[in-house]
Figure 1: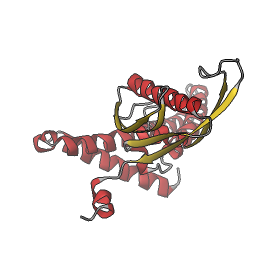
Figure 2: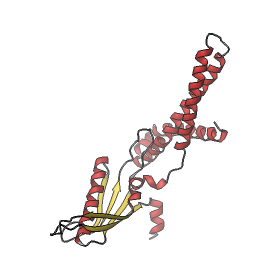
Figure 3: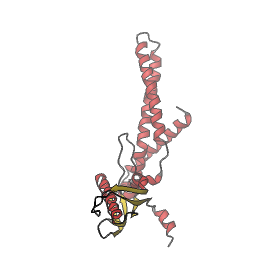
Length: 231
């Protein structure tokens, strides 16, 4: 392992130990905001810390296996252990390097989603309603909170425009890393959305093409909000 990578992992391991100590303190536990922030940081550090601990263990196993090569009775087993250790160490380094790739800090923030009907008239408004229900049901499956901030309903149903605020705790992924929050999940929904179908507004069975636009923005933190609205 390269020295700078080892130094980085040692620093992260020290920080994880600090976080474990802080999270056990009554004053931190009594402060919901501070406890949540430290818990999120701890969860983000844990996967790389676990793999680094595993790396050091296999590194020690490799050194011990090299020592056993001098024993004729243990040499064959030692060679097998050396090969296994070297292969696992390579994979652990790849896993650690992937985990250390910087993430967008906005990914963990709540999201604002604006859905606006475009071309297609009433059918476009119905499509906007479909998108709104799709996002809402997806959030319900994650136990995320959806709040309708503003809406302009169309005469035949759906929306000319609707703005949602989505907030929820990130989920832990199978590899032990913390998944993205609302903005990280929905950020790539931004842009134009198009549907081709026979709408309920069509009496002759013709296929119509309708479009909506979706805009997704992260909710600013308190400091940013103060700068945006200095009053």
